[in-house]
Image (cartoon, rainbow, N blue to C red):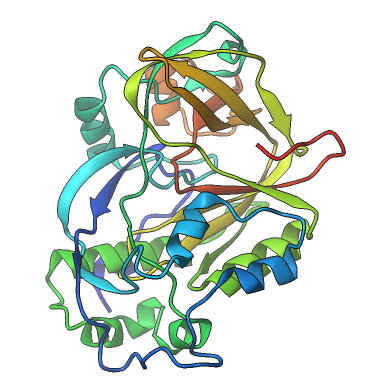
Length: 329
């Protein structure tokens, strides 16, 4: 077993600022992956989404991955172009204690951007310098049958490397090891999580937890600059949500987890250059049980306890139960 997997961090609240990898180069599907054929091996489409969620619009980040040729289905060269992204993959929780390297990278990359902010700062007129980016994982879903045929567990790590023709000491292997380690890390108390390797499994997990009367929200893209909250933020759902982050992997995989004790808002913003953006923010209402070393407290110069908020990446999806007054953003 890879040392990186056996020593995978006890994942609880990964930093809002997380290293992510760009995926610029597509390669052929491995020989084990069958050609797309009619039936169970056909590429995923919107049909399954609307069969399970007939009253929920398909969010743009998923719609893009379903457009033929928009992204490659499988890529291999995903260890180049390392950079920092705001909320490349937000991990919710309360006992995060490590990842000093991520902290240092975050500080050096975005010293003048808002990472976390206080709940009371979510009001019209508030100004924040923000960077809305995505995870950098520009890959599409595989057909469900194909995805389920590919090993995805730490005890199958050698088979995964062989499948993608990767060396055990390569950076790509380390990334795969880390991501599977995150998926297999113990749940914190009250948390339920799952790594969805297909569109269908992504939908099934969230429908089973939140039902079919849901909204699926994502942040609109916007370049790094100063933004002003232009109107009252709209709360969506109640105090429960499921968040799905696209992880660094050769094909589309989402790390999903159900979180409680939160409020989800759609925040209207106006940029310094006049651009308008609707951004999704999550506010954690009680941080008293979080580690005192959590980056949020360091950035905000506070102690655990107060409600803390952060924006989501543009390809992070958040599922919330609909309320009667909710409207599609």
